[in-house]
Amino acid sequence: MSSTGKKYEAALAKVDRNKRYALEEGCKLIPETKVAKFDESVDMAVRLGVDPKHADQMVRGAVVLPHGTGKSQRVVVVAKGDKAREAQEAGADTVGSEELVEKIQKENWTDFDSMVATPDMMGLVGRLGRVLGPKGLMPNPKVGTVTNDVAKAVRELKAGRLEFRVEKAGVVHCRIGKVSFGGDKLTENARAMIETLLRLKPASAKGTYMKSVTLSTTMGPGVKIDPTPLVTEFENR
Image (cartoon, rainbow, N blue to C red; front, side, top):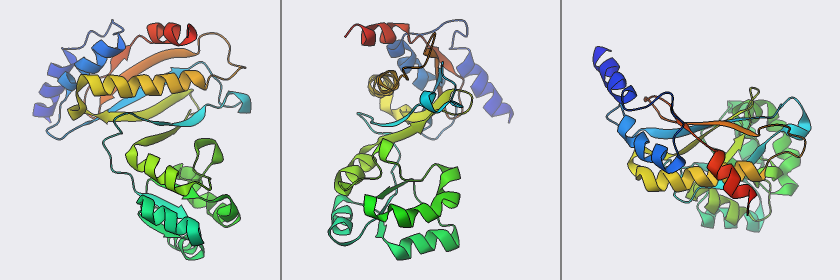
């Protein structure tokens, strides 16, 4: 514990806690805050000026990060016939219909990261709400996981497509890569995520929409990012 504590303190000393870094500067600093020996993930927390209690202020969507998340996605597909074949050819880890739904329902099997389903199978998949809902695994047309183009959905998820939704406190948490990505790739992934959130700004959201952005490694301290230049750039396009 003492060794880890010293490493954390050393990483913390590299971060100016009173400063909000430019995105590129912050992303280049993040790898220097690495504490563990393994390749730590890099996470982003964005606090939005929304109240998720109101349906018209729910922020939810998906983004294909330019460089992926650094994590291999396990994708299951609920489909039949040609759509099942297309999913298999696209690289889905598991494909099935009634038997797959039954396995999940009876065994509480959730050893996967994303589920894709064709619209005609949603009556069947709907039975899994109690199992998949709390884990955020339920297919949803808003994020492209209920679709007839299952091959495209599988390929995007495997390539690093990231699904997200705002939490009760108005914060969106997401993984934008690994420390080994380096500053440039992390910057591009973070920018893609921030721009996606800006595009999803609810019309009913009042005041400052993007209140704060913080980056951190799995074990390291947070690095505050100034989103203002990115917001201004986005609004002036």
